[in-house]
Image (cartoon, rainbow, N blue to C red; front, side):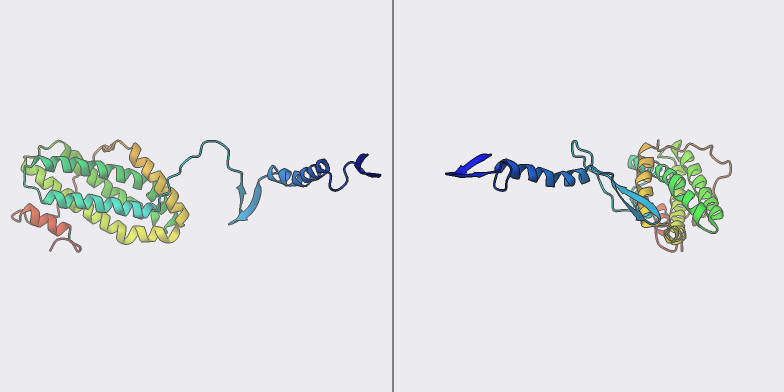
Length: 249
């Protein structure tokens, strides 16, 4: 018993006693603490069980979130390469910068092709009704482009053959990119979720970063058909045709 005043006592632990109040507060907090350390929260999402677990303690990590999806990324690749072709067309024949730009284009094309072959084409093959035939056609385009890249790598920039190969490469790439953006990309977007395409975009970026930027296939013996306008037209005129929607006139 604890004396409370003259002739009065209060039982220890009764209301108003500081130690008792603190003990009751701990008792009330205990269930809440136990709930915090209980099993992770589970909920059903799209037929799958999603488990939300507490974030691990430790140094805060920054995550870079990319808004683009796979098809946006590949379209941006196309635009970048076509811009470089436009820059090539503005340089005079024999200019050393033409070789530097051609090497840059070759590197971008090979990395881009690896990303398509590893992340876009398997999805198209599995989801599209005519997927195997579509992918076979796109792969044939890649083989044709890589054949031209293999030839271009060994040609001096001052050679007339260099200009001719660059023009043919511009033609093949422009046609291939236009076909994909007009037909393949919309078809794939219709059968894939936005989440899938964002995950594939991240994987494609990694593939391009790890790629050597050089063709690794055995080059085909047959060279792609030359569909350029007659050679008496200047290189600038021919490239302008290929970079204009609708193709050569």
